[in-house]
Amino acid sequence: MIIDTAVVPVAGLGTRLLPATKSQPKEMLPVGRKPVVQYVFEELTSVGVRRIVFITGPGKASIENHFDINEELVQALRESGKEDLLSDLAFERAPVQYFYTRQRRALGLGHAVLAARAFVNDRPFIVALGDSIIGTSGGSDVVRRLVRTFEAHDAAAVIALEEVPLDDVHNYGIASPKGEADDVFELKDLVEKPRRDEAPSRLAIAARYVLSPAVFDVLERTRPGKAGEIQLTDAIRQMIHGGGRVYGVRLGAGERRFDIGNFDSYFRAFVELALADPKHGASLREFLVRLVNGHHS
Ligand code: UTP
Image (cartoon, rainbow, N blue to C red; front, side, top):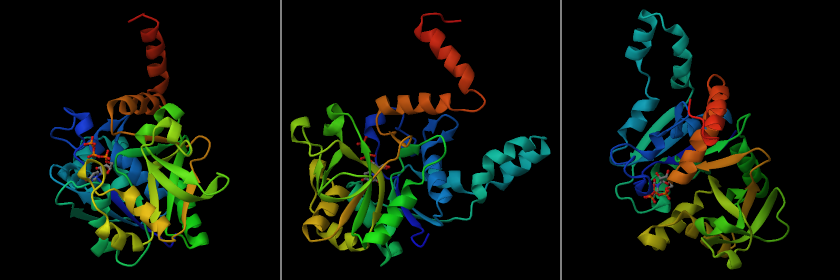
């Protein structure tokens, strides 16, 4: 992939997950066996991303530690005959360059992306939110589809979209399609958290983007919107209104977005991905069936 740089913002405060996030990042919460951000990393590297820029903040050092090579741990596993566990650390060896910079104040996602400017310069780049998993049984290549669409249409931005129930549109940025909303389509606008009777579609922004570097100038000019934060959605809207072409790419059948930003979807994600665990999934399923039927043993 020519676009091989991903910006992964992980600087948010995670207040909706307190007290779990009081002294640990939400991006490091476990979902099944792995922390959230490792799923994001695996999704990105599987489609050819080779440079990852984490936008971090106070209290996020464990994310950097997680992606370090831990020679002592490898040595200890070897010496104690636990070689079989080494494969769980194979991700440490992925051919990726890591970069870390800090968002010095938590002023929103748009502000976090702006912190990558000096690093990204004048090249298009991927943005993958560090608190959202795109889950499938076979691994998602949605980022590759975003990149292809970006290149094919000389776009200003391409956004992954997931169809959500009408009752949930008020929680998301919602796409307003220009024409027919096929698998890939051009956007007329984006509406942040609309009421259900005002939603132009049920297609919600799903935590993955490809952006032209032109977004940086727009972000510099973007005033704080909702909750005093500089919103990425506002900057993308401004690009559309300025004549830029912005496209949406739907998540495919079987591709699901798990948002680990609130307890409801975190609990669901944990259960669903733990049920998919090759070793423990089947027995967990039996346990849950017994549990919901009122048999506890
Ligand atoms: P959210 O929009 O869920 O915000 O972040 P938040 O501040 O983390 O959470 P709450 O609202 O306090 O519960 C979506 C992604 O964008 C990053 C977060 O780390 C998360 O991965 N983010 C958000 C930043 O990097 N900086 C910010 O200022 C806000």
